[in-house]
Length: 281
Image (tube, rainbow, N blue to C red; front, side, top):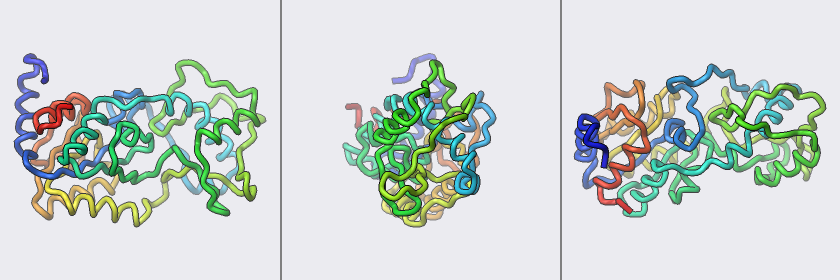
């Protein structure tokens, strides 16, 4: 349970648990859920200013793709080595107890899946897969990483790499880097993620909507709700008069629409909620 020193926080969490108690809960998560796993937030306090590559840049510029793949590979080992934290595990426990109906996540790190959550809608895709834009062949990112290193034996993953939320880093140089292509047809490869400037696949959003529609409450954890898809799911819940609990450090675009807002870290709050709702282990 939270420390007695956090009596005010404990009271707010108890209010959240009361709003959720006895209901089947859908969950929407953002980057703030993964910060305790060592993956930084895009917009949280202290987050560096970043200018991620857009889909148009990636598809039209060989130089942009080279820069992307160098940075993405340099960050891959640290990114892939991150472990699920208590927030991820708490949601998995809540699902296994039949309390959480599933997780819709804006994250591409795959940590909900690794924590044991079974119904996960990855709105923005996953870094676990890469596909060919020409023939559609899908590749495991781990296998591709081995090929990248074989083609670029000089590349070294630096220590204390400044990792980005998408597993990317800013490379010092891209000179001489061989960009991987499709081993089936030689076409352009692209990570199976939604780049800036791309739309979330319609079928993915429909799946997320269905999860919210089949639930009786909504938790939003670790998202500032800057991305419109999050606000749209919040509105789906509000139209059905479902209780909405928002857990996030700092303000979000949905605070004035929440039944309860918990201004705290997601790991401790989700862990406490799991215990209060009957999913301690």
